[in-house]
Image 1 (tube, rainbow, N blue to C red):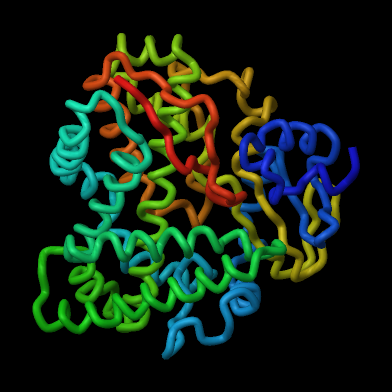
Image 2: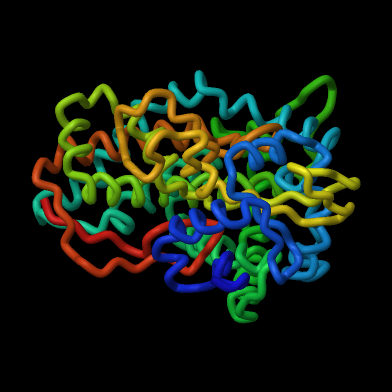
Length: 399
């Protein structure tokens, strides 16, 4: 097999099923240098080592973002979000926003999230069929994050469209990409920034019981977020707050339907839903890869890497590493302690992980309870054309 095929995330067959590609790459070249210049890691141990090592940073991605989105995507230009910051800036920003996303805080939202799930399923119950993506997986996290940020219901559709275009353009960072996709992502990012730029003064003048008002008021050791930092944080929270959860619910539903024995186990013991969601996250990760850039010369598993080298940690591959997980290609909702890295690892561990877990548990658990005869209604599945975010365009089912 030639070098290009070992890791070519632009192939349609890679979008459909990246795991055979990951397996070959892990067996042949677990530390693989792409012809495009970056390195790809597929072993769990190597990925965790990079994600926990601050010599592999995020600051340098600003140059790549500028190359993709231009110098002034928003006018005036926004500061970088904490996703692309290293300590001490990252530490400061995360401290100011993390209080809203503790497991305890998210648990207080469980009852309301359950109400949203039930309301969405009520709409399709009598029809006996649904598109899991359009009818449940998308509207649930969009509604939750919009409500958290205080976005009026009338604006949900516009914001959802902008967010989808931004997420689609993520592949352009470090990989050759369609200029049309990049331009749509650029326009959508501007539109989303402008939206929150208009909303922030309203919340500052009339605070409400929402996350946006909380961000404006947040203070840690006398430090506060600037207005532009609040807007940048809103963009990050909105995109990260729903795109990945959509894929968790869609991919998780498909995996259970393709493994009826596991679906039967979960129906028999619904209390296992928490563990099942962790296994579904491991089995088909909503986020397939993340990246770092070396801030100094580094040696990784005997391979010297120069300063400024981009290293891609293939989270989806690490979650199927047989050195870490027994029989990794098998879905097992009873798997003990499936320590996946679908939410990342280290200081950039996903801030919204507690929220995604609760949304996934309630969406999947309720769907299985209310749709006892759930079945796939199509044989040909269409996956989104992204190697960063793995998810279906639609998932038609009957029940």
